[in-house]
Length: 307
Image 1: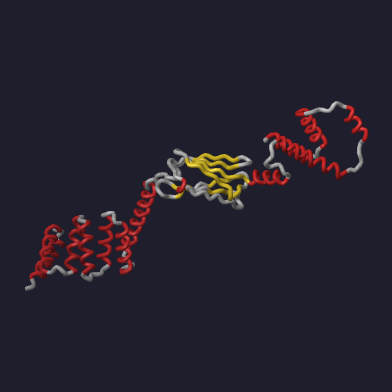
Image 2 (image 1 turned 180 degrees about the vertical axis):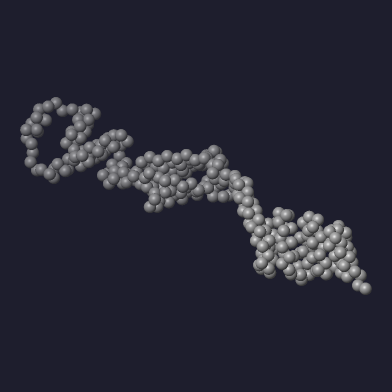
């Protein structure tokens, strides 16, 4: 007689008598005689299942599948044991394969619903317990900035920066945003986006590296336009005195072109008056130019006086 068949028969009888421990021992002996017998693995998995040995059940059914066994009941048992082990993905996979073999078995739907609920709960738990990422190195770096009509000044509190690590690349776009990148100690780029009140000149940037900060300055288009306007009138590099003299000459030239007639009454009056000299004469001239000048001349004189 075949010893393996004899042992398996005794094991089956023990299982029917609900003596699962004895059946398990006999199935172990049967597998020693025939270690590649898929049916013995299936039978032993059933004994483990009755005893609540979920991992052993799952392992035996995997071995049975490896040796070519395919049945709906085996996949159902495998799915349930995986569920009890908390392997919900494996359980779902086994149950779906078993349902494909026997769609009339209602237990497949029941356990698949349980798997779906557990998977959803696990996903929600993961999302709630997901660690909050630490703030990036860039977000921990403070900066200060302000803008006047002449310049945009940005101070980035980066320590011990070297000049070769600083790359200033302001850009002017339709949204009037500017970009000021620098190099972080980690080697990453630090980028700071700011919305400026006045458009800036992309070609005029200066920066300085200090022990505790980097200061970047960019000229405003408004200041550049004022500079050009003053230069066109010959006033950009003049002091207050030279400015007034230039305006006086310009105004006198305009007056000479505008009229060729002379006001003899004024000439007689001016001749009769005592002539002033030095600073007093110059101040009188400035007052006269301001009083007789156009609005444009007055604005120019006021700006030059303030500056």
